[in-house]
Length: 353
Image (cartoon, rainbow, N blue to C red; front, side, top):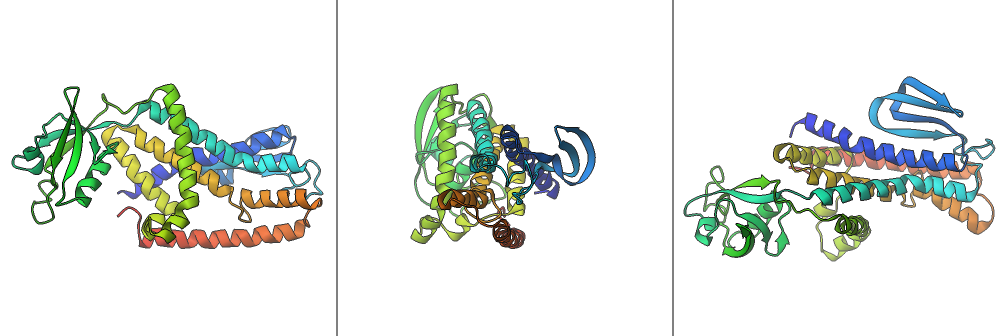
């Protein structure tokens, strides 16, 4: 995978996600009359000041990734009209708005993706005397399921036949509009030449005219379920790891490099097949993950700041700004250290081999 694909896909996916997150903070802050000193497109350093309105500088910055919001008095309650001087309700909703906007963005992307649907995986050719030929698979067959699992992309089929080498697998295909169930045994390593053919001996194509598309209402339900599944999986991952339901490799967190690897591979797949579903789905997934992560009760993150607002509501008085600021500083140093380790991990042990 080219480094240009990784960089390009990272920017393509992360830019709108980060921008929407910061836009959420900005919009809700202004609704509560919290003064915002700057709303920037991209990350500093500043390239140019676009305009100034109602005391807010709108800027264009050199690093083309997302954007940022700089509220007045973020940690200083003595600044009139600033974030820290606002009411508990205003601070709570302003801090939570970034994640909420990420969830809304993910819902819209998921809804559109399900309306489009992924391209169907079809058989382009069958090698004579292969397991596929013996089972009766023919060119033009559309593969619907493998062992009861929907084949939304070729990777699902490849993983199934590789994992079940030497064992029977069931394929549900569609031939000329009619369903057909076939059984075959994928060959094991050494029984075929991987340079010439795969374990079952077929070539694959993608048919955009038989898509797995859903209707508008079905897409709404599927979108909500997808968002909830991502959040649930994120919460349950540590428990699943302890119970042995998933491996440490499957549960590993990824940093910017890992995200760029996944995004780059997905972008290449989309460019090769014309199947936008996978790229849209990974974009929505990252949007949910970013929003949910920011709500975690970790100092320096939005969730950590929300915890201080909730503690203030319970205690009836604010924790000293100096102490809160120190906690967030320690949290920021921790997050930077963690980010550095994740980057090293993703370089030394790429998530996409």
